[in-house]
Image 1 (cartoon, rainbow, N blue to C red):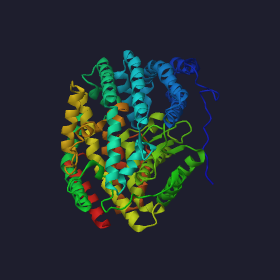
Image 2: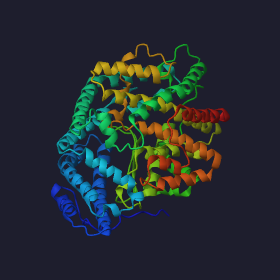
Image 3: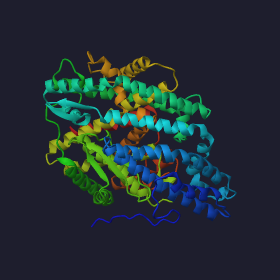
Image 4: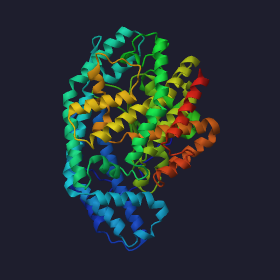
Length: 570
């Protein structure tokens, strides 16, 4: 029987709190601001009280965001989220700054366990350093602008065979074996995306201007340098990112171009076009691992159970609590995410499943995040539970690869299972150049004055380096020039993307360790995730039994390992 967690008793905030106005929260922030602290124990209790308040507020915000994304057409849901962003969050920023200063200026601050609190302390000090009151209204304005991307993307539907499809549903048709049908679907999708090119260009121009103002107010030359500090990137630099891009270009692209050349040969095509890149190279119909969200979830629970029973229990708990919304539908925002809910300690998974192998991979990915949430739920502070993305994405991307040996729950046919694993292995490398291109694009965008046309020209240059040499884009040059517009991160969470490449490399290393050491690797995985953010990123990776390494040589080793696994699968 599934054990359903209950919300812990509150010690500081009223059990009856309902956030309908800033006045509902003000007394708690005033208490924290004005409370006298007479010992290190009182400082620690104060920190726990602050964590409780922030967990409650964060969970309230999470539910508003989740519900708004499930149905973007519901204006009431949108208004509830917008109310929090516009009417509540601006009041909190000054208090957060004052509370951060209260911690570091306390005479008992030095008595905190410096080893345990070191990541918390360095984050706190940097937040104080970059805080500017004049940025508060700009954050609000930026958050409102960022919402516009989700609305534009969610409204993108296409008519195919007299049926209205979301872009995710239409994209599934690109795996069909009928090449003429694939081309017609691709053309419809490309035309639909191009309809919003100008609107998305304008939106990004506005976002860049707002973000650059925020950075300059805080004393930075550009938003890139500001966001590295704001995101707490203490363990690597922008130069390290550039070096990683170059390493990926030299160590990964040759392997991927070989894969694409082989696909073109197997498809027996003289011209290899954008609509040929996802169809099965052996002309087999798309894999059909499940029918409907319920089967996807049940089979995923069985997969996780087969790796470690605890992993299956995590998803079973979420199922019992109805903390998942898995299937694609009209009006639902694109993408997928696992949203931590720090008060209850059980996360929520949102995604857009349409019945593909990619959906299986997505739930494995978000399920990895969910397991991480369960493993850190008892940690003392929210800051310990909120791990940097390089850590969080290692949890999720590793699970995509670690789970492959239990995918028989989805595939009874050994050939289908082999095919799914092959797609996953190649996919673990395939994402890296795209991530590098998107990250490099953003470095350039925020350090270079440019026009929308110059953006397209720069992106084309990146595609020459990080795109397939096999694909013929003749007639679709505009589509290629604007491909970056489908990347949500550029609009909504700038610079949050290179973490996926860092974590993907870590995940391949984690999988290699699992192939070599079995249960010992799983023990390392669980032990590392349980640390939360109480260690630096290099320390975390070491605890997981892998390297935090961006070199061409190391990345080359991991590529060679994947190639070897693919050869053995053949």
